[in-house]
Image (cartoon, rainbow over all chains, first blue to last red):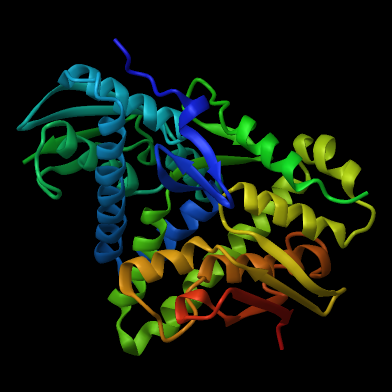
Length: 174
Length: 199
C-alpha cells in the first residue's frame, strides 16, 4: 500500500515558484515561522492564536485534499493517516503519530516538530502550549480524511514540549 | 565569477529533500519547512484586517519587523553555513556579491525573483520582484490593494543591507529600512523595494 509521497515528482519548480502536488509552496525557516507566531500572540493574544490555527487548518485542508485527489489509491482511513504523517515529516514540520482516530476524534502525539525546535532555539521554554500551527494542520487533514467540512474538528493541545513535557499530545474532538 | 543561480536553486531543491529522523530539515544553518503560500498570505492579511483600520500601520510595521529579524538571522546563518562555503563562496568576487547569493537563495525558497537593479554600497539597495507570492496572494484573496502588500520581502531587503553594512552581527539589525515603492497587488507591473539607512 502506498502511503508515501513521491517527492521526486511532487516537489518541483514552475518558473520562480516552488510547487508541491500542483500547489505553490514556500520554504521558510524557523526564524520567520516563530517570529510570525510571536508577533500574533503578543499583539492579539487569543485572537492571534486563532488566526494561526485557522490559517493552518485552511491550508492543510485544501492542500491535503489536493494530495488525496492525486493519490486515489490511498483509500483506507489508516493509510490516509499514515500518508498525512509522511507529508508532515517530509515538509520538515516534524513527526505525528495518529492514535485510534474516528469521526468523533482521537489522539495525536508529536515527539518532535519544526515549531517546537524553532521556538526553543529562539526563546526557550514557555508556560503555555504553543503548537497552534500543528493543531490547525491536524484539524485540516482530519476533516479531509473523515470527509467533514472545514472547521468540523477542534484540536486541543493537552501536553506541549514547550512546557517541559516529553512530547506534544493533541486531542481531536467534534 | 558570476553567481550561478540555477546551481543554488538545484542545491536547495536537493537539500530540502533531506529530512532527519525527527522530520526536521536542517539546511544552510537553519531549520527549513515547506508549506503552502496560502498559509502565510492568509495569516499576514488576516492579522492586518483584525488589527483594524486604526492600527493597520502598526500591523504592517510588526510584520515587516518580524521579517527583517528573520532575514537578518536567517541569512547570517546561511552565510556561515558549510553549504554557503562550499557552494556559494567560490562564486563571490566582492562583498556586494553576497546580495546576489542571498537573492538566489530567496528565489530557491520560492519567495520570488529578486532582481538587483541598483546597489550603492552602504547607502541604497533597489530590488525588483516580478513574482512575489505575497502580491499574488493578496490579489487572489482580496483583489486590488490600495497599499503595498509584500511585507516579508520588504523586511528581507532591509535585512540584506543590515547584514552587509549594519556593522558587526547582531548589532546591525534595523540599521536599514525598506519601502515598497511599487507593488503588483496595487496594479503595478512588478514590486520594487528600496532599502536605505534608517534616519
